[in-house]
Length: 346
Image (cartoon, rainbow, N blue to C red; front, side):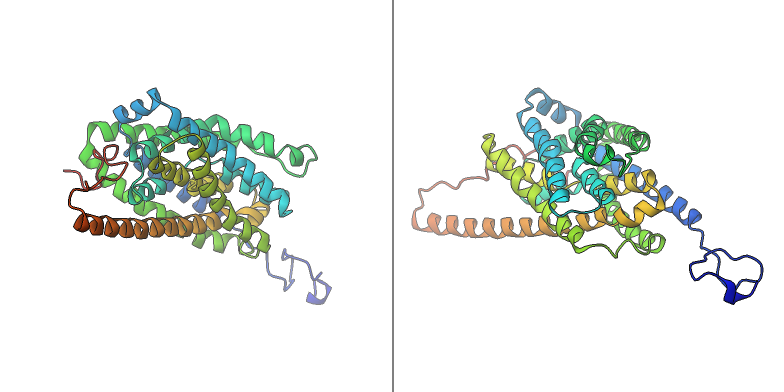
């Protein structure tokens, strides 16, 4: 067959055709799925190594803070994702990626940011653990509710079987991590530090391999970038406001705020990779990465503002102490709550 007889849109080489064969990315896709699954399991294992059963049980017995966090995590975030998707008129399959991110539990990075902002570490860890366990039921439920306008018309199909399998599988590494924390606490602290590094490595690996595998995935409509910026900002802001309306103290408001806006992007990336076709991934694969970038950037700004505020407050207190020696120096409001927590425990 002469090359002049080939269709310009042909992708399969037959006979003597000069048209190059279509590339097969099945192997690379399998590698990416395997890598993401292993890294997610390790990140979840390290998260379990941060949970102390007695402190977790204390918050379960007085669950008001966890309940407020639940309303933020599975109330504010999925609803905000749906409103943003409709308002910016993105593709249905892209809206699914936004909603999956909104339905994800809190990320482990929120625990670190909570520590830096003098939040309630015990509440932060308890909220992350509870939201991860509750996601087993709440993520499918929220997706069913908020994607109904697209699934009813046949525009998209939600692979609940793959999604459910991924979520159920998370119980194993988390449970093992909790066991290690309570049996071998010193080793758990080392694992926790390694897990924090793995979280960053996870994002880099996903971006690099995904960029090669889904070459058109970064060429997306600007609206998706705008949503990726606004979504975590809405989570941080509304989480703080709802916590304050619920009567929580300032340091717990900061905790709930960070837990709401800081989503488990690693889980979202893994679910998306394991549940959708290559054609669909070209449209939705990059959103978890976009969200990761902006949630970390905004979280860093939040921490910077708080640290600056603390320095100014400490300076003012020092000046008052010099002018009035009888004025007692007050401790941070969360001094007792965080007194038992330290990143450098003996």
